[in-house]
Length: 249
Picture 1 (spheres, rainbow, N blue to C red):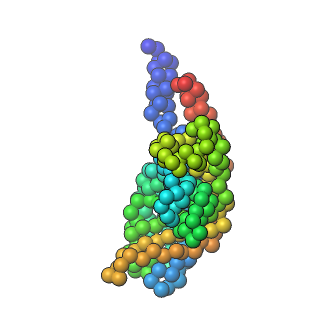
Picture 2: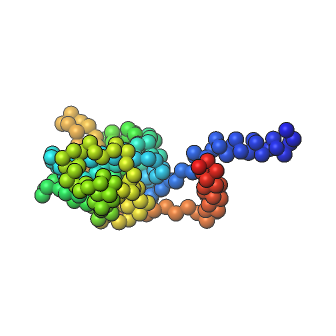
Picture 3: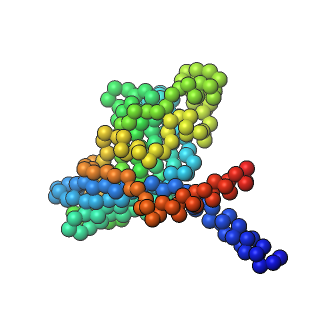
């Protein structure tokens, strides 16, 4: 093998090793808001990012038990990279990577149910570490709700060869555990937060009085756009990734 062939072989092997990484797509949000955990209002800024090319695990709600009525939930496990807040005047709360994103597409909901009819999403990360007003926070999550669902029963009618709504009501097991998210309308959309009329930060802490969940307001939420200097390398890597996939097919 001559030096040129060796160089090509090394380059090809290197591309094969890094392909799973460079093919990933990361969505990042910058947000700000306020919290009154501990009875003192504090302002904060935060960052949330997740890898949005993870395959989901989808489950079907058969509508027989409340508050969740007939619809779907897709969980993207291991896709959260970062979820953290920094409070003005000090203190912060961070989470370990490796959380998950839940996207709920509820087609029917009982009046007064906890989950509204429509599309909702929650971003959870690993255990939280940090304090707000000296109170240790155990869980940090972002929630978006409600959003008009993109789902139509027509896709599942064709997939299952009949009236999917009726068939699944009678036999939820007909829905495969892993199903194409485009079929159920639960795909991760980088604009999902921008479409939600309500976005909030949830915090959970424990005390001698029990467990407390606080809904903290979000005042601004922006999708972070890659800088122009980073756009070209990412586009180049995407093209390489696409060519590599075609060769493997």
